[in-house]
Image (cartoon, one colour):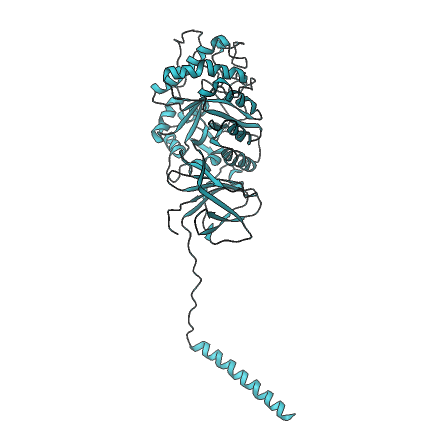
Length: 491
């Protein structure tokens, strides 16, 4: 018993001595440093975002470049975005707005220095610029001009009194300055109404185009395109009529599908050919709830003259664009208008809806363009016609030289800044809670528009078909984002 206690005591003393010796050694001897784990920096992926909060204030600020959102690796618990740049779909014409007469007036009335600075920001391609590459303009007045007008106010069967003098006040000077910044920008012309004397009711609101004036109205389009060409402005395409099934606006026109088909087949198409005009003819230009309208034109004698059909989304589902593409794969589809209401309240929700349905939804359904509605209004939402839109918020609010950037500035900028004309949509899988669409630019970059409409940050795996490396990407809560992958850059 005593021997066992003695052994225990000796063992305890030995342990204490060893521990003390280790402590003493640690204090007096340098240890070998342990190298930190190697982290391979990812420099070939950038992510720009705009969050709901970015567009909810008086002074909005989105399109922010994020830091440290990409890393090498793969996590099986995350969804995986797989992109195949060898599977291409439609070529992209561009992203932008309607430069209404009112928008042009506000911009043109700025001081020269302020105006040029703003136009460079909108249409330039430098770091702080958003590269808008597609514009829609009205042929004559839209409802966001101060008063309705046409280019032939006086009844004249020869159109000798045709003049674009009204457009030379603001619209044409602004377009020329835009073209000096971006000479390749594409321009689409859309009429809200023919001259009143060509209509059944002799009024800017409603009525129909008199069949006896079909040929004369086709000449009107020819003169419009030629007059703009004389100013150095190429009209890339025209739609035959803005919202042909909405005759309640000022100005407006009711034009049924068979009427549009007959006008194109019997007059507009042949007159363009005779005049040597290459401007594209686009049908419909109204809501997604009536795909039967453009399909009936596609199936008519007008088919040989038309390039495609244009859509808005005040009714219907964006998948209607694919319905039209399936009806005739040789014809193109375009998304040409969606307004933002000044009284919508939560522009964070507007940001998400527009991005999901238009910038992702429309392009996934074959659209070559995505256009928001009005580029600019003032703080009183002026100008507009008597009977026109009284609540149309511009992408910009311009008062004198003061410019505020609203939600549509950021939705367009997230796309136009990174996806130039001539890019192609490419294959990407649908990740469910992270809607997305991908493009291949002429420079070989892969650009993906995506959104996270969840209240928490989301991470996902990203992998290019045919490449070994995988990446983990983070996107903030309640945000829309643009991911740019440059496969040519080294990590």
